[in-house]
Image: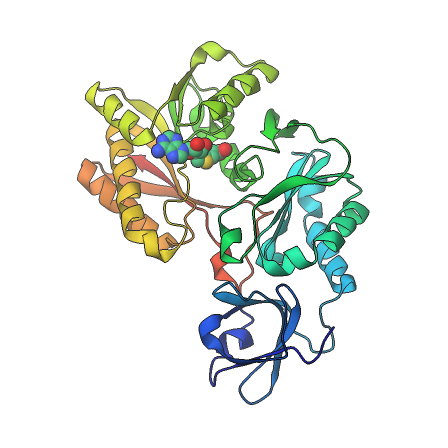
Length: 398
Ligand code: SAH
């Protein structure tokens, strides 16, 4: 640890750090002392020389520092890293021991005090995403501690995401620990089996964050005609069948995703004849349904991030409005819409406003019967509100 690597902030720019927000933006920096290299730990000081935090240095990013520690006496070290990983996994004991699933997010980045580190467990495989220069710097230690603490020996890296570019990091996928890792891993969740493509699937292979919402839709699915938009590998599709749906129509633009649904139906012994798989753009397929007067009792809208950041918000807002409006139009009287946004750039209030506008334009009377979010293994630190990304509304129409 080099005590002489310091980031000095401009006057008054220590405020967010005093509130324990873990990011140091480039605009807040007055000057550097020493010559830190990418990923190294630097001391953050206020303009008056007060100690604020130890942080990982990321020279290419607008987020130039990500805090590892708030205590001067506890700088970043392998011991601290190990403690954090241990705490993170320990805090999920309730879910891990619940027996309802063998797939969990073990580490959720900033909200678990480990900026830029995501670790998901799928049965006996861990999938790791390294999204920041600081986590990249400690990758070997992270791998070693994950094996030690979790007892899992197969670890695959899926750092093939756009945000790495912002940190000046190349994409990387490959084995971090273990010899051979299968392409697909079978997991279970609330009585349903799913195949997870750990090497090629989207995200780290499965949308763990939707677990509680998958369970919730079962209550609404009995004997219903269901439409699952942006179905991916069928998380909601299979849940609806488990809940007793009469028929489920699943739309995704990815043929691969639909193939996994077929496999998932098979391994669960679900009747494939009640499922219609449509490889299509949801925007155009909803219009096709509208024009042919198809209707549904329960519709799920779980699109990809239309607005990763605030910049894309305007276009994204139009996209959300469009699909929600069409979905409201396709609902039978008394029907239910499960609608989500996982855009970090769109907050809950705006999302509700967009859905309200869609109902109005679709000329339906709708009410919110429940609000949804990411499941318990995707916690949000109160000092890091950016950690809230998944928002969902269950709306019922007259
Ligand atoms: N509901 C899923 C996760 C959805 S992720 C689950 O619970 O597992 C978003 C999905 O939308 C991806 O599978 C992606 O292939 C698909 N997708 C993205 N844009 C699309 C579009 N315009 N039309 C149809 N599918 C789309």
